[in-house]
Image 1 (cartoon, rainbow, N blue to C red):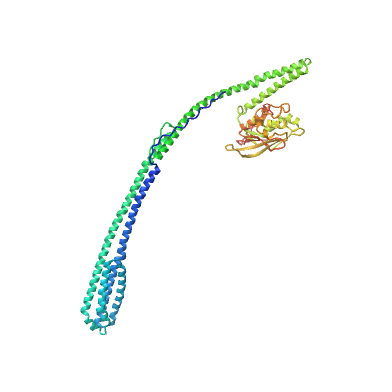
Image 2: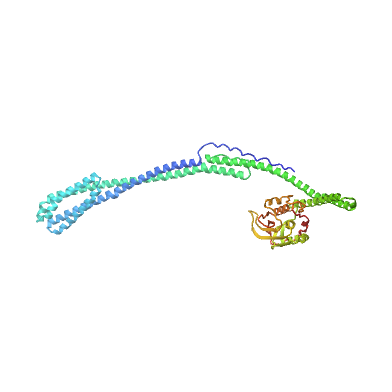
Length: 545
């Protein structure tokens, strides 16, 4: 039967063109850069405003307020000096000089503080110089002469008018100094208020700009990314639901449009492959129908081969033998040899037909696979081969055999062929020794699960390593029929049976002397009692190599 090959899958369609433009990364990069520049400018303004407010605050709290306090302390010190000198001049008691001396010390301390705070300010330095000048003049004309005079009362009366005028000048200088300092302090306070207002305005503006940037970023991401992605997701969901004819819209930045174009290209490719798959499935359904019809015809042929074809062969052999017996005295040796050839050919044809039927039925005509006790299968197989084993004087041993899952009839054929091969291909002059071993389950290949590993070994003539693959091919023989009988189907049948059970069979090329075949079978699938199916029916189906 000819099987048509499905036509070639459709070639990929060219991608839909995508117009140029900014990508999502480009938009995000440009927007982030612009926002960063704006934020840096705002941060710079904020830093400047904070610095300006700090300077104004320092000018108020670190200069003019301490300067006013120092000026007041200097005024208080000078008043204490004037009070002490006046009391000493009126009474002549030296106890009044203590306030004077304390006032001098306090004046020096206040003068040093004012000198430090007046650095860099010409008017403050001039005010301090004026206060120093008037204070020094009063000290020179009144305070020191009275404090050092032998007659302080008379000296005080002598310097009363000049001392009063000099101290009034000191008071006036201090008043002017404090007025200027207060004016500077008030100006600094006003500047500080203005700086605070400016700071509040700048930080309010920064907050508003940040909120605006967040809003713009949200709106931009929504319009440029989220909306196109939602549209793409909706289109993809339409396709995922099976509507492959639905086209995907291209929108958004360039990279999202490119992504949509790629997904749409994949949709078109899937639609084409789905159409191709539907056509191929329909074609395969037609071929499956043809195969079923062909299998039915093959089964009919197998029936004909097993009955109708073998019947003429039996007649040929029977009538040839009858001819030889009835006309034996009229036939010469050559004629008898020709009759033997015909009978032998008919018998071998019958055997070959039986072997071919057994080979074709593996995996096609069988009972349902069950858990099988190999001990039972081996015992019944040995009963079938009892005469052959006894004639050869073979010694067969085996490990305890487990329960496996499979077809009991085919497993009987497997053991029968391997044991009969070991007996048939025995070494001349040696007692055939055959051993069947079983190894604990091991993990099989991926997806196979655990399996038992079995081996049938003997001490026969062995098989060369170069024939390790050839011996499993049907009709492949290593010896002539005159040397060892058989059709070359036995090992091919074993290989087909093992592979039907999901295992593998190989020749152990390292085993000497003799031959060792290794094969695997699946574990029993249940804990139920194994089936004791009688494999004796398979004995007639087995064939040695």
